[in-house]
Length: 375
Image (tube, rainbow, N blue to C red; front, side, top):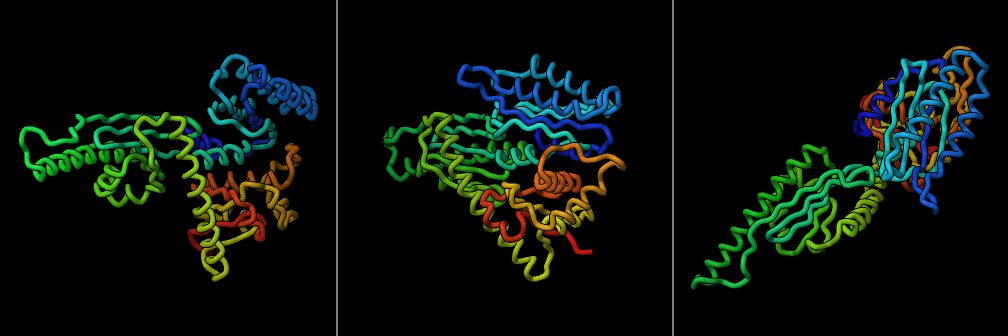
């Protein structure tokens, strides 16, 4: 199950009176080569369990979840795992979902609420979107697909290398045409492979890399819908190690992200100022999400900015909680707001865009949305 599919499944979870555990763990090994999350898990699970009355349905569900989580962490974590996310509610038909990631989660976090806590997982998905890197020269190509911090797919194409000098008495012009035809055939084969992978893996960003001879030929053979996905061209040799390819690609991706963020926030603010299809601030954005109006949620990657209209936002959130139940999460109201925004966006299939530069959204409380329609 992909992260996208998991997020959709979690967002569809119906809020329940029983506790729902959302556990995020940094699974990177410490200086001794050991996992560092065991003590956090024991301490936090024990402390949260004590907030429920013994032998109550909530306590029984929580205790079953705690035992299942401990068993999973003991038996099933792979050595290559650097990040873990686990969601559990035994009282909801033994609900249990876990995902192991090669990318680290920043810090250990445990949320206990009436529904899964999605913000950190959605944040990871936004940070590590799938992208393709095509590294090519005139007779070979290496095609990589990366996502969630790991290589998801790779293909290689190799054709016979053409000699640099004419042979067999050919005229220079005839030989040049032969070379150009060969390069064209090679480029077409590479572009066909790239098109197939992009469609198959739903790639939105492509980085081209290679020498100055093949890159123009590749671009000429790309259909417009493929060419529009190219965000940068890198000068790399075919023998470049994979880790260096990744490092160079990440620099290009971060630069593109910064440009995209500025453009998206600019469009959002222009729409709002002109009275168009946009809202800003946590309260109005939550209301638009509740009405199913939002096409794209634009939210700061730092939740500290989500402070505007806190009392009204809290009232909206309280209306969703099961009757008579206090919210058992120990997180701050700002974090709750951020999670509610992301969850509601996933529920209505709205795009979620995290803005890395917090200053871009600081004046509007860290969040806004472009709308599909107005009521």
